[in-house]
Length: 160
Image (cartoon, rainbow, N blue to C red; front, top):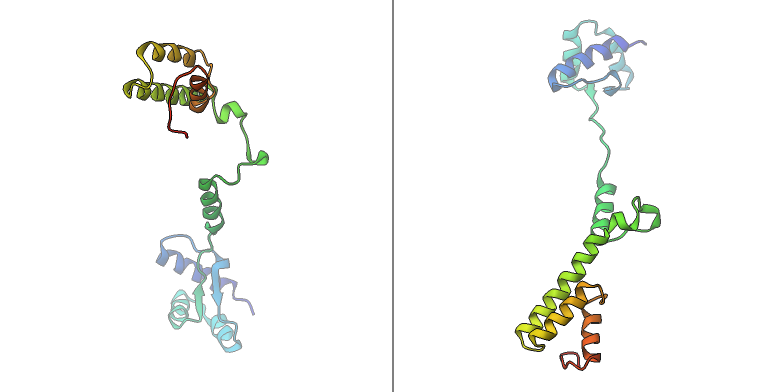
C-alpha cells in the first residue's frame, strides 16, 4: 500500500500550518489497517486535511539536542573542575599571564604596606624601604614580606 503521495501532501499542509518546513519523515500515520486504507484512498489535499483533523495523520515533534549535559559540565567548570592537563589549550603563561600574576602580587603587597604605614606599624622610611624591595620582586607574597619584616626586627603582631 503506497502512501508516499499522501505523506507528501500532509507535509505540505503541516509546513503551512507550522510556518516552517515539515519533512516527509516527520509525518506519522496511524498503523492500524483500516486507517491505512483510509489514507491510501485519500487522493486530494482536502481528504488529507480531513484525516489530519481526525488524528489519523499527525506530525512528529521536532527533536532537538539536549543541553542538560552541557549545563552540568559548565556548572562543574564554574566550580573549577575539569581543568586537568587534557583540557588545557594554551600555555601556563597564556592561561595566567606573567604580568597579571605580577600585578596581583604587587598590588596586594603595596596595599598591605600602605595599611601598615597608616596603622603606624612601620615608619615612613621603613615603608619606603620595603616598598622598593617589593617593587624589585624580593617577596613572593604578603606573608613572605611580613616574615621578612619580622626577621628584620619589626614587631607586627596579629599572628600569635
